[in-house]
Length: 401
Ligand code: AMP
Image 1: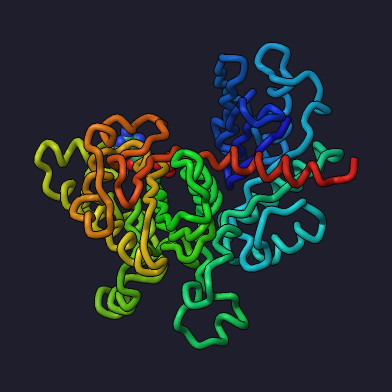
Image 2 (image 1 turned 180 degrees about the vertical axis):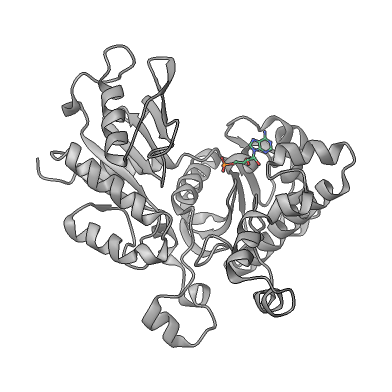
């Protein structure tokens, strides 16, 4: 069995896969680690339990997850020896990790060195890896980096037009995120369309709370909308996305807004929330727009328009597009946003079958373009854990016993 681990600053999420990766035997999340009211939600054998338990540290959270996996009633294993390998989600591998890798001391050291590039994500990822290695020392542990998939971007796509020394001395460049999701859905789209991955020029629209648009040519990322921080590209739930970088000077000099305040505004008060005023959840915004709320409608219009512009740009970057993929919370569940993105895009061969578009909700994998369309439009529910499990099993099987 393969265990996947996703460690955040106050959460640990886990899933236990059968060896053939066809079944999820258990899944859970330990939340509010180190805070008041910490709890575990654990599901296995068709039952889900939610227990409030004090969890002071990531170490305790990891131990608790293992206890639940071993539990005689809620558990899925009778001995930790049944876990053959552990896959860890790792956010930032910078240009040091081109692919998933077996975790060694050298890998942990490198991740610690990269922590300044992802201060919110890499330190908890590292804790998760260290605790995992301590608790399950006899099995291979694998790190699956969110940035790795985008390491195939050419320099013209990943460089910022800053003085070159910032790249050389400080690693300032576009890295991209959501790579694990992107890799999974582009492979899955090729399966669904029964076409070789090498033939596909895909634009992947990962539309969740975070939003990433990626150009995937023949299975390789060639450009992506998120860059250095998790900010640029399409507007997101509360993040502004592409805005004029010069605004920061105007905010500071003319409006007297400090850098810290500016950061809070553009990360937490902007995007769908900032424009609609009703929330950051596309369900709430769509409902408000349907009831005539003009700002909610504007938020949807802007969101779809920004996606459209990236689809056009990436079609140009790849010399054409023959596959458009929608994934993540909004991509998998919002027919109106998919319709708005695909409207008036026939010049790129993009068309929708309206009925299929309406039907593709709630985690359904579906082609939503009409048969014979020059560009296939597909909805693929993302599954980062499965991708992590696939890499983990592959790398673990190469280990000497
Ligand atoms: P994710 O980050 O992939 O979990 O996506 C979360 C976001 O998906 C939420 O903030 C919602 O905006 C959106 N979402 C989830 N379900 C729906 C739905 N049924 N219709 C529209 N948007 C949805």
